[in-house]
Length: 112
Image 1: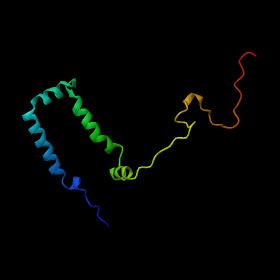
Image 2: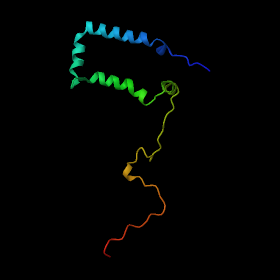
Image 3: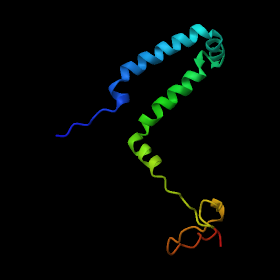
């Protein structure tokens, strides 16, 4: 079995967390107004900045984004061209419905 090597970020995750905690404490000491300002953005005792950060932290895990592929695609960009008249430019109501074969006629009105 081949072992998967950990990236530098994964290998030193505890150090990154401690560094971020220390940075937050330091920032709170030198600029306490930032914490007060961020605390003002809350609804029903829910901090909106914290909620946004948690969303961006959890979303890639929920949708199972492979960051190795993201980095790979960023290194080898390929342009995406849409030909004129493509469905991206055509409003949905003007597209022709696919042919589904023989359709039955509408039911006859009652009493005729």
